[in-house]
Image: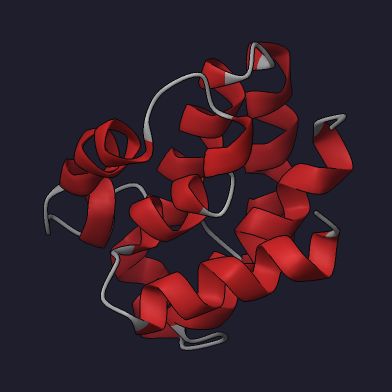
Length: 120
């Protein structure tokens, strides 16, 4: 899938009710070594800033999960830094307060950003 296709898939998954983490992870489900239902369940508690605590953004958690499941753990830190650079933070509550991008757009950004760091 192209960067645009992954971004669009994540945005659509979020609009259909997936939380931010689930949307990012499921946009990459075709590359994960686990079944989609397991990926959805794994990502579920990481939405809304880790179970609604508004801490680490679910998009960031989702990127880290995809990296871990695809064997690209060395890419997590650069992805986090790029996400922070683009969006101003990695903490859900602060991102929401800033209001720079709505969640569906951050989800799309995160899913697409992974294509810059993970070879398909």
